[in-house]
Amino acid sequence: MKYILLCFTILGMVASVQPTIAQKKYNLNQVIDLAKQNSLGSIQAENRKENRFWQYNRYLSNYRPQLLLSGELPNFNRTISPITLPDGSEQFVARSFAQSSLELSASQVLSATGGRFFVSSQLQRIDLFNNDNVSYAADPLVIGFVQPIFNFNDLKWDKKIEPIRYEESIKQYNEEFERIALRACGLYFDLLLAQVSKDIANTNRVNNDTIYRIAEGRYQLGKIAENELLQLELGLVNSQQQVRQAELDLETAMLNLNTFIGNPENENIIIEEPTDIPEFTINTETAIAEAKKNRQQYLNFKRQRLEAERDVAQAKGESGLNVDLFGRFGLTQQANNLPDTYVNLQDQQRITLGFDIPILDWGRQKAAIRTALANQELVNSTVEQEEINFEQEIYVLVKQFEILRAQLKAAIIADRVAQKRYDISQQRYLVAKISIIDLVTALRDKDEAKRNYLQSLAEFWDAYYTIRMLTLYDFERDEKITY
Image (cartoon, rainbow, N blue to C red; front, side):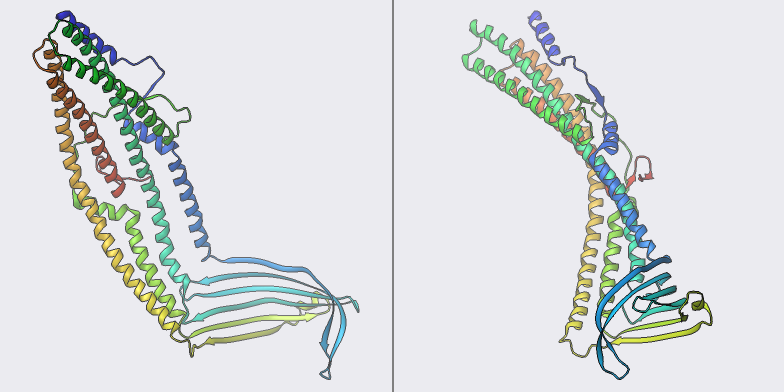
């Protein structure tokens, strides 16, 4: 009997030995670091960050002075066109001329009022080919402004909204990397579970094979019934099928993880089981406060309210009296040669006040305003509910985190006890102290306890990285998360 026990122990040890294959071990932190460096998600996050950076710079450029050089060099025209004679009659005349112009202008918007101030200098030349005549006109200095009155000022509202949108993108960038960490954590534990399941399946197959062979000898001696032998044979066949399924699951999980972390070589990697359980505590009020400070979503609430307010202002600004004031003052001169156009300059002025007053629009303006107001009320109520959900989600998750830690500690004990119980049951069955039913029950409980432990481990770390993502705060190090 001692010989049988020794053979059984050696076979069990052999089952746990893997073939010598070039492998690389990774712990959880290493997998997450690789995902943040090489995954497609990290590359996309970098691209989105750069895209938003240049969008924000484009917005800033709207408030900076603009310098523009424009012109036509030349605009040639050869046509037969009607002209008005001194007596008021019309006559078709063949015309052949070229008109050239060059203008240098600088402008600056006034975000507070929505207006625009400009300074320009212009030179024009006309060549009449019919009589070889050349003339020039110059506006050496022109100063002017355009000022909408009572109109919607998009510059003012952009100045309120766009900085928030850009700050959102920065916080979203941080969130995306924490989301990558959360996804990598899930794939990590998928592979760990697949590896352990394969080890369990191999061990169970060897153990079932050993027990079946011993049972065959007992059956020949008439010590066990045929029904018990058949049940052991069925267990052996099922364990062989479980090995094949476990190998497929392991290959799939390894491929998924390698693909996500950007490993082009598709390494045959081994996942190290995390053994340290962080013991820090999380205060719910602190978690909610940090989430409000660090999350993109909370800024999104503020931006939604501002955008709804802007839409109301736009509806009102576009539905009432619209007035545009245009003013221009400058110096001008014309001559048949270029130097004379800058001598004895004459002043020029222009003031224009244009307006639009809606008289009859069949309620369109009123409907536009009411629609914007109704949408503002909807946005405010929706955001208010989302803020409540936002806080509740974090509150519940923090509470669950402590429960999951306690469940994990209990699962560790249960796994150890179930393994010890199975080892004892295995030895007792070999010396015919218990029935096959008791052994199968111990085996089932052992495997279930191991999987429950791994599931608890995965849920704990999933909650850990979810809290980091939802708050952008590292409670273990007591610091804000930034990338």
